Image (tube, rainbow, N blue to C red; front, side, top):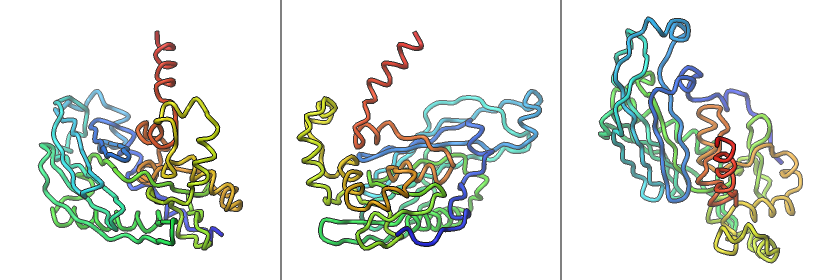
Amino acid sequence: MSGPRRDWSDTTPLLSPQHYRHRGGSASAFSDRASSSFSGRRASASLEMATAAVPAVPTRSVLLGVDVGTGSARAGPLKKKYTHVHEHAFIKDHFLGIGNNSALLSWVGLFDEDGKLIGSASSPIQIWKDGDCIEQSSTDIWLAICAAVKAACSLSNVAGEEVAGLGFAATCSLVAVDADGSPVTVSLSGDSRRNIIVWMDHRAVKQAEKINSSSSPVLQYCGGSLSPEMQPPKLLWVKENLQESWTMAFRWMDLSDWLAYRATGDDTRSLCSTVCKWTYLGHAHMQQVDEKDS
């Protein structure tokens, strides 16, 4: 049901390890549905060996805000700080705000350190609708984003090395991939491309009702009941209706988290999406962290 395996090149991170190992700048993306952010600084092997000999130069933290509903973004400097960079790397930093919505579009905005939009581009994405089932392809979305990023940078005459950070925003759609990062179908059609259950998909109405009838104390933190648009009912639907896919799936991720993982190789989940769509009790976790630190 998952189709042929894809080469590892399909899951190669967009940013090199040097980019996200040295986090001198920051960029984040926020959405009413989900958010996920990653940032990095240019660096070299010599930086790790002899940072004491490298002068500190002022750089800025830049906030990227991406609205997936309107396909727009804003950016602005937060505060000045200092970081070590290579003595020959006095290049103005740029930041990418990347949004993916359910309106058949991936949008990219390129910003400078002052938060000024200097370039943008978009690329179409595919969607399948069959009754209550609405599906997309993570491979298709990623290729669309790559095309839009290249176009925005090319039109702005900005090289990839000049991009210091990026932020993702996307709808809270459910992505299924196997241990190799290849798509696992979530479609009754068996089409291996369709590995995303889109946020507005309503196939899991009965599963949502089943969960809500459990009277779990977790429900008090999400308004007393789960919507079929949330992830637990969708996961239960896959388990009950697509046993092979349920067995093969190694990662179930929100789309914004998958995009960040796909770009960096870092499987860190967004607190926003896990709390709002996965019933994760983030406040309980933070309380444990505070008690441990105290």
